[in-house]
Image (cartoon, rainbow, N blue to C red; front, side, top):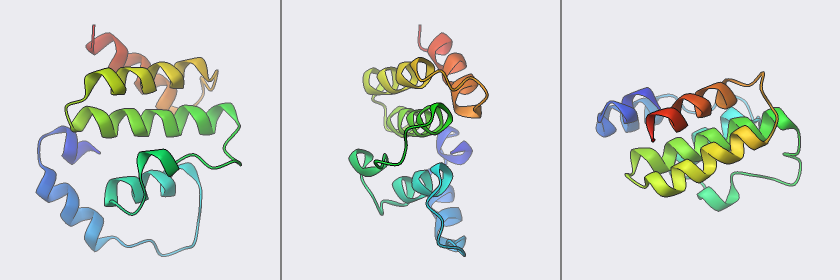
Length: 105
């Protein structure tokens, strides 16, 4: 995500390519990696099991950032707002969504 945000898309893709998943996990971070690798779509990042506030905040931030690096600030903003509405304040995604919303003003 950091490399993508810095405009270094090729370096970001190279990092994703050389760091394959070593464990079959389905947590929010693994789901976001699949989105950034192009192995899933933004519509399939959330699963029926993703109902906790922290999961919603984390996944929503990840999708918002995905849109942001693609230049779609309208959709990014909507996902950052969803992250905040989740109530998952302990999540990194929640805190970072607050920051992103301030930047997008």
